[in-house]
Length: 174
Image (cartoon, rainbow, N blue to C red; front, side):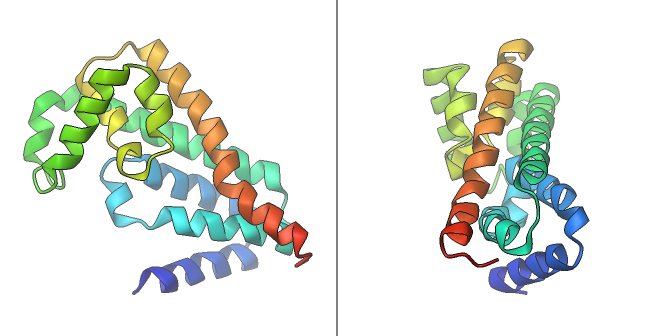
């Protein structure tokens, strides 16, 4: 199944089951933020498409943003915990052993920017799923990590869905 087919299926599902939209978006945001799942799930394109669907289908915007926020924050938190438990041994597991340059970039970025890397990394596709993992490996202070995680997840959730919502309203698709 191609990415466009997957996107079409998810968008169609949400159109038919609008009450599930916040939960579907939460799962997609979780997958997008989770170290291994981000390789397997084409969540960014689906989330942008769902943003356009919201206004066009009459689905309330803020509950879906809340779903994205919860999913994104949980994905980063789980990645942090995995990094905390596995430390450097994580480099021996797939996909990290296959793509060591992602880990190298995330480590260098986290060393340079510290806690700010968690916030900034949320907005960079390749770093999004790896920085929280590295933050856990580095034993970053949990409270500082969570402050950066939660604040960036909130902003990211609005920014990933808002363009589609705005375009849909501008073109009056509903």
